[in-house]
Every structure is written in C-alpha cells, then in structure tokens.
Length: 492
Image (cartoon, rainbow, N blue to C red; front, side, top):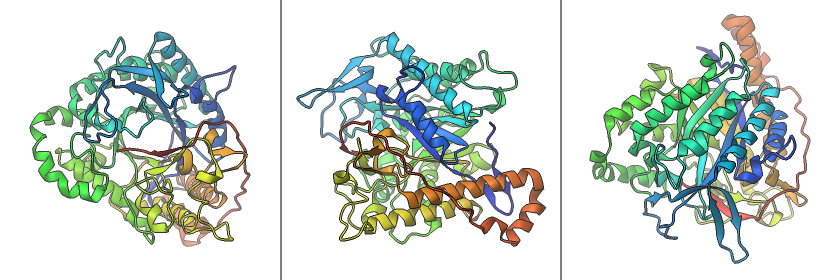
C-alpha cells in the first residue's frame, strides 16, 4: 500500500517506528516448502503495528589479502559468497558464488516479499555485504566497483538484479517499494559514482519490466550511508564520531583530489531517497531533540562534498530515511554496559547470535531485582525516541521513515528468531508497548489527516483526543532456533 505521511504545519511529518527483517545469511532467507525464517519474521513484524518493513538481506565477500587486526587497510573483493560456515577449528569457510546460489536467493526473497504484500505492508530493501571472516570488518571501506566481475560475478548479478526480479514477482499495484543500491558501502559509492549511476538506470529499467499498471510512481531508488565516515575513505580507524569530525577537515584534504564531485552531485540529484544508518553517542539524560545530532553530523559531512542535505530534502523533494535505529548494550571495547552512560555512548555495539541470559547486556548486573540502570535507560531511550518522531516539526531535519535494527541485543521486539530461546528473549515488553502506542497514534493521525484535513486535526489536538492512550496488549513469543552467541558491532 502507499505509505502516507501526516504532514501538516501543526505536526510536520509523523512517522512510525517500523521494524526490520534482518537476514544474516542463507539460513535466514532459504525457503523450505512455503516458509522461511524471513517469512516468519514478517509474520511477527505484522503483529507490531507496522505499515512498512525494512528488509536487510546480507551476502558475503571474501578478501584473500585480508590482514586481521589492521583497521587502516582498504578492503578489496576476491569473490562473492552465499554460504558461510564455521569449521571445528574456529576458521570460516565461504565458497565462491554460483548461479544456483543467485537463483535460490531470488526465489527466496520473492517468497518473503510476497508475505509482506499479503499483509499490505510496504517494502524497503537495504542490501548488505559482510566480510566472510566473521570479524567486525567494515564494508564501509570496501573498494568495490558494482559493474566489475569478481571471479565471474558482479555486485549487480548477485544482489541488485535478483532483488529487482524478486520485487517484480511479488508486488501488486498497491505496494510501495524503496530499494537502496547498497548498504553502508561508502568507499564503493564515492569512488565509483559513474558506475552507480549506470546501476541506478539498469535497476530502474529492470524493475519496470512487467510491473503492474500504474505502479512506477510507487517505486523509489536510493542509497544508504553511515551517519559518519560516509565516504569510507579516511580515518577508518577512528571510532568516536566527535573525534572523527574534528580530524576530518585536514584528513579530507589528502583525498579530495581523488573524488569526482561533478558526477557525485549528479548521482545524488537522481536519487529518490537517502537512508542514514546508526546513532551518534548520547548522554544518559538526553532529551528527544538530542537524537537529531546524528542527522546533523551526517549533513555536515555530506556538505564537505558539496552536497547540501537540506537542499536535497526541501528543493529536490528527496526523502530521508533512518535505518539501523537502536542501542545494543555493549561498550566500544566489548564489555556489557554497566551504567546508563555506557549504553548511551555505544549504540552500535551489542550482542548477536542466539539469545542467552549470560550474554544479555540488558539483564546483567542486577542485584535482587530485574531492573538495572541499563535496562531503565533502554525504556528511557525509546520513550524519548517516540517523543522525537512524534514532534519532528520542532527540528531541522524531518525523516520520512524510521526503522529499528531487529537483530541481537538491539531487537527489543523479538523479531529475529535468534532473539528468543528457552532461556529468555531480547523482547522487552515496556519498550514494545511504547513502540506500539507510538505507531498506533501515528497511523491514527494519518487516517485523520486523510479524512478530516487540518482543521479537524487542530480540533482533536486541542481537545487532547490524540493524547489519550489506548490499551495496548503485549503477548510474548518463544522461538528456539539459532546460532552461537558472539560479540558484535555494526562497524562503521
């Protein structure tokens, strides 16, 4: 269905907090019969008042020159991989891609998209590549030409074309689709902008091949970038966003001559949307407006490339999305957060793999109580998050969509199968209820905007009709499938 924003001078853009369907490999998308882990995640997400979902399919790349521990190296691709397996000696195997892998991926994604369409849920797709080693190697510094073959396959072959064909086979003329050309691969995008313009055109044409009549205006193509280190070309070893911002001007001078600014500007002018990924550090007592720091840092750095975010949004009517939203509960050095300040400062760091009480950062360090400082902060964080997205009109940058990161210790809704086991779940009832209520009132306002217009909205606001909380029920779910628990961060 078409996603409509409540956009009025009174409230600006009001958006829901939507869920993500995170696929960390073939085990999450492979179809067995008529179902898969992906379709199961769509079923669970459909219960969480979602009108749209972000699908995050993850494939792998192998770099034979990779040197563990070297955070400054630029990464290159030897070949793409669909099957990653862990050996008994702790090493990882990842076999080169074959056409059969591509076909299975396309078929499986089509089945998962169809499940979303059955629920009248709009589709966003944020494809990712992950280093095959299992280490926290950032794809942001991946030197990849999307049109170049790597041992027989291009990125277009293994990712964009299968996804385009899967979308074609799943949608109807009421399904709105946002497809990102890549996910947080800054160096790839900024080093090869001409190739991405060609990829944009090819993907657009492919998606229009055999689509339902009247559907093209429901299709949107864009890119997804980290909120900092957006080009992936400098200071890759610097983890702190504030330190990175301070060092950026001098470091950027050294690489500025290597970039084709004219082509970059043309590429961005052709996009329908930009997704910003991640969350800047916060203070434990942050206010809702402090969340906009993430978008401010992104806009400031993008401006260094001569690309003004505010101009894109206001003059070119480009949409702004926020993906990978949430906090993970670990510190930057892999320790479980003990204080609210720990959790607030290290949003990208969390635990992945099968849920276990021993590794749950939100349940550790409790003393004769289920409540901990970090667990309290988790509730505080999402209460302020809901307030921020409800009152976007008070800030400079208004997003058109916001997506939670539903994986590991970030997955407060328990969408991913590994987020719940016999030992418990990352699903956290108080936060689930906050999100459900926010989405309920956001969708209610959208419906009112369509039927009553602004005078009706003004009357209801003044009468506090929209402030009345409807009861929101919470039902726990148990899912016991999963993988090993590992320390994890969404590296930038």
